[in-house]
Amino acid sequence: MAMDENFRDSIGTINEEGKRAWIFPKKPSGRFYEYRKWVSYALLLFLFASPFIKVNGHQFLMFNVLERRFNIFGLPFWPQDFHLFVISMISGVIFVALFTVAFGRIFCGWMCPQTIFMEMVFRRIEYWIDGDRGAQIRLDRQAWNGEKIRKRVLKWSVFFVISFIIANVFLAYLIGSDRLIRYITDGPLQHISTLVSLLIFTAVFYFVFAWFREQVCIIACPYGRMQGVLLDNKSVVVAYDHKRGEGESGRKKFRKNEDREALGHGDCIDCFQCVNVCPTGIDIRNGTQLECVNCTACIDECDAIMEKVNLPKGLIRYASEDNIEKKAKFTFTPRLKGYTAVLTILIGVLVGMLFLRNDLEANILRLPGQLYERKAGNIISNVYTYKLVNKTTKDVADVSFELLSHPGTISLVTHEHFTVLAEELAEGTLFIEINNAALNGDKDKLRIGVYSGDQLIETTTAAFLAPRSYK
Image (cartoon, rainbow, N blue to C red; front, side, top):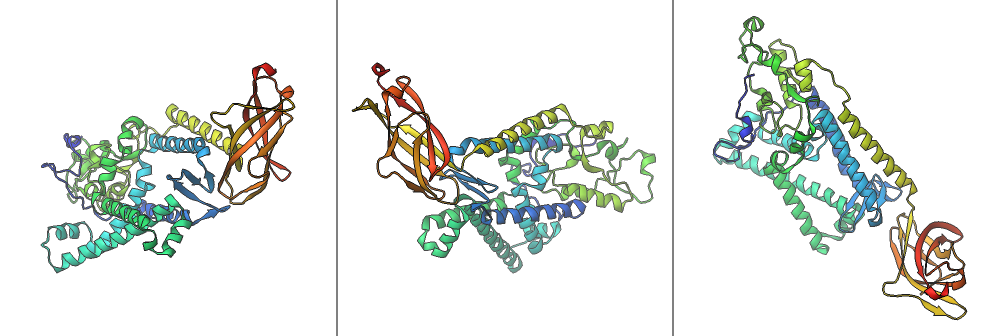
């Protein structure tokens, strides 16, 4: 196999002097690129619309890290639901790992926001302003004349505007779309700190898409390095069929009316178009590499070349190493079965816990540092703090507490009945009084009901202290 044996010594975006080698990929075309465009535009629509879609009054997707409030597919997750959020995130990681074992970095090439924005938004704008690969290279080497200044200013301005729009959408995910719209209508001068944060986000996105680019996938993202652990010879990846491409005598340039098969030449005509079209600057013919994001651009380009020279397509294709070496078909391996089983269990646990979750969560704890109080008539009193979290978009009115496990009374410090506002937290202090004769020991477990009017909406437990001598 004729390959550059030193290709793993450095990454494709660094030259021999250790400096950044700027990538000027050729504009892709072909059936996979068309499929990717449809997938990308659908995901971009989803990305931009999700913060502004409401399900039962909840934002469809929100990740408010500062207030620890998350909405996933319209389901609200509060700090008290952190375990559910963790399970959902672990399920997502296992899901990505499962597809990586089966299909390599298909997520990177088809679904990753970095790839979608870079290849389907910023790169396409660059092709529109600067032209294709050859025109971009000439423009880069060109002196700073009127044409170059005009194109650079136009491109950088458009990049900045798009980065600003992305930053606004990103902020909508963090603080909520309603709050973002309110800030916009109030005017930027009314919310200077938010404006500064927005400009910082804009600068980060501009830096990533205008300069850092493919380096995010190669250097910053750890996912490429995970391939070494997750991939095996049965994983389906974007691969070069070296057995067919190299033949017996290796790659040779195409010559018209030449019998390549009789001469032992491989089907690869060494045109380097797969390298020129690669957005990370690698040569896929060297084998699976961490820089490859499985974007399929090389598949489309190679198929177009094969068609022109009247050779079979599929020299570069989705295939496993076993498929290339042994013509083995894709199988559901024990590793895939293991990941699938774990994912199924996690999703089952998550769905079950979601169904068991109440819309109003109650937490009643004894006041720290307080023991108990003896009262007349053999009555023992304990003081507690309560916190009620309303996870719905509707107020819960006429809320009261009642002992379910013991005869006794519950009295609130300020009022007997109150309202827990929508998506808010209500807290306060209450006293529980029980006749000592009804207690089983010095530390009983109480079951307390939370009512909205006459309807029981939640139950919780609390510890009740009593003197040992009163058993």
